[in-house]
Amino acid sequence: MEAFSGSRGPSVGTKVAIYPQCPLPERIRGLREHTDAGGIILLLQDDQVPGLEFFKDGKWVKIPPSKNNRLFVNTGDQVEILTNGTYKSALHRVLAMKDGNRLSIATFYNPAGDAIISPAPKLLLPSHYCFRDYLNLYTKTKFGDKDLRFQSLKNMVNGHPSILTGEN
Image (tube, rainbow, N blue to C red; front, side, top):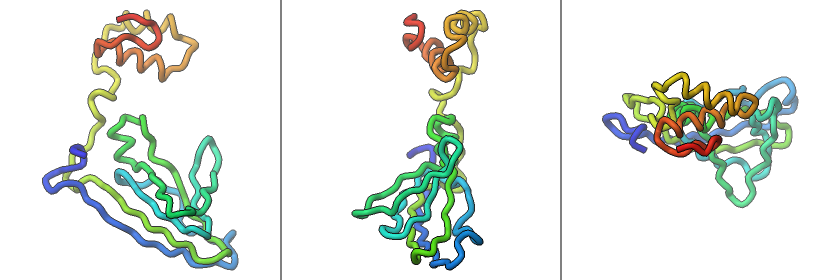
């Protein structure tokens, strides 16, 4: 991924973590809630002991153990920035468990330290447009989904047919 390159190319690192069995898991957290700072994360998690949770729709969702060596793919903060929020970095945590030790092997694909990160230009709202054109679109879509309205604005400015109005 060119956006991650910098002068030396992107970095790849692996973290192996063992979360020990805990007799009182309600008193301690394995790893508190956070998003990952980097780019793309490939996670091979324990196939027997749960503990990973993601925050979705206002609640914590338990991720079951990974049977059959399935990889879990997560996006970090830099992917959210590069995609201008299209892909979100996921808030997640690891709970301590009394069921046994939990193994986690994560591989991080991150930007080089000197990589310049910015949203991809095609994913930005247009840097300029005529307010009258926006008002025309707004009056047709006022009570609709704002994200679709903004996508239509991008399409209009970039010379593509609008997904809402059908105009060229």
